[in-house]
Image 1 (cartoon, rainbow, N blue to C red):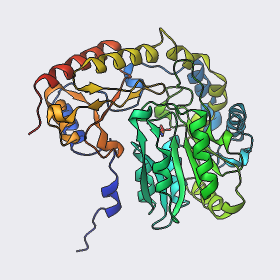
Image 2 (cartoon, helix red, strand yellow; image 1 turned 90 degrees about the vertical axis):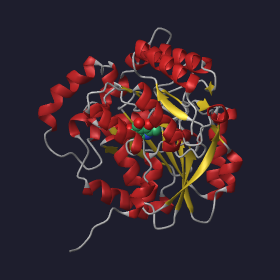
Image 3 (cartoon, rainbow, N blue to C red; image 1 turned 135 degrees about the horizontal axis):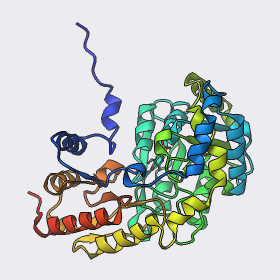
Length: 405
Ligand code: PLP
């Protein structure tokens, strides 16, 4: 009898959706235990509702969107995306350079599959959004992690990036605003990254899915706007800004110099046609969504849910002895540090597992984001304030007695 094993590459897919913590959470849920999930950036279960106008638009369009679309996406959707790019200072992009996808997730995987040969390297941040490392690995490449420095507001360490560029490096992933740290990068920092890419002929993979979820009146700069001469692929979508993660609506736009990357673009076109097209009803609301700014902004200003919850979680976590957190400026994540000496922690996954079993709260350990030291975990601060308060109380209590064996 022939035996089929799981691909070895899958072992490297260290992802916050799998592993012993998720297995335990699922087991507990099956037994009827109520678990507070602070592990996933999915707004809908926490009472966030998509704008009515958007839902109406999708509903109205259902009959017109029954068939496949062009494999890149509806022209009207791509025109709206090009318009949005221009608004963000990205001019070197036309409708043929835009690809819609079933969420950004699908396009991350596609962009890596189209590019990488065995052993090719992609620079990926540590901590990362783990799908990036997984996609590089599954495409046969090697994710080389560059350090983001907590003592410098979680900014990427430029010298570390420099030291990791080799002959095999094809590109760099820049996640801004960042998941899991909630950091927003300055224009100056992005310019430094662009200079490095220019000097070394790197493609920039700019994951900007949180660009409309910026707090404190700050402004997001698209890295592609600083690098019109470089091939930059910018990823964005409606899962977070328009609270419709379940509708699977994302896109990527290729801008800058594509002359040296004809084969790669051909590969992207081929892979894009192979999956026929992305969800067409979801594409049909992109134009409307990108014209709606107020609904999202209301969540981000004082009195708005994301703003108030960020204020609370930042203060509350920092009040717990042994925990310190950098204030997030965007998205809805915070990546606190835990004093490993104080609690004898040598395994962050075990810490999160013990906390889950004891206090029925699901966090993600730092290792899930390819953070090497066992001294961080991520909190999604989407749940209602009362739930966040309860979570912080339970964490504070847990840490009064927790010591790892
Ligand atoms: N990129 C980042 C940084 C994310 O945090 C996420 C989802 O959490 C995604 C991409 C995937 O988003 P989508 O729902 O568009 O697949």
